[in-house]
Image (cartoon, rainbow, N blue to C red):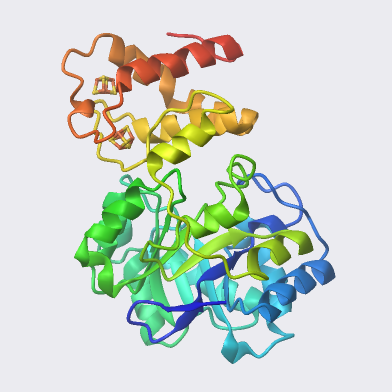
Length: 357
Ligand code: SF4
Ligand code: SF4
């Protein structure tokens, strides 16, 4: 296992980290692909990763990741705590709420979290999170009180992560990226503002969807050139832990075109790298729609369709009468955005759970 610096925290984390969603039990409405091992089995799986050199474990509060947080707490009891780096997170945006959650997490983990993230920060809640008495202020206070090691902002949005990178209260950022959705990682790599912060990335396997068109070695090797501190892999079985951590995968250089070509063997993907530079004046999240389309085609039917249904019908209605299509001005992949939104519209119509209003 190779290790990388976690920004300016002084911590060193394993290049590959353990994402705990797949070890939760029950029916928590997060990404699919979890395996419900009992606590004893989950602890053994985490131990296997540890024995291969993994020292970084990421979880979230019970409402978000079910019992993964308490299972991680059980694992912590079985190893040398000083060798572990633990991150936790909660989707609360006011200072008072996240303060309470940090205390609850510390109880569930049986130890102080090394990093605590405000989870799922987006454009709608960012002002509250970063504002006075917001969640970030509270995490900063908790750090000074010694209740957490470092503060973090977790988001799927480049603009939010950039805001975190410019904020001196933030130590670590968590974003998503993989060999397909590499646009945000490319932007972070070029932007020196990010260099002092630790960077954790998730969705390396895209919740397992990219395993098939690509091997684990390609998915891991294909991201190693990006400047992250640790890349989280969702692990729920001994086999997954073995595959992820037993080998040291070498870097693999895949052009984006090669990735899209490989996917074309199964379907005609939307060739969007999710750089997030397209802005629609009507506020439609084009890149999220394109991502869900590709995920649907890769096999995640219900979950992807549900997300597409949340906005894409409205987006298409606007596209039909949109004259300027300003969204396309900054698309470096030269995607016919309204045309692709039309394709999503037709998919949703064919799916039958959709009516144009
Ligand atoms: S073409 Fe569609 S997505 Fe693009 S700016 Fe117009 S309404 Fe928004
Ligand atoms: S549609 Fe183009 S600009 Fe928008 S996220 Fe995808 S690649 Fe980037």
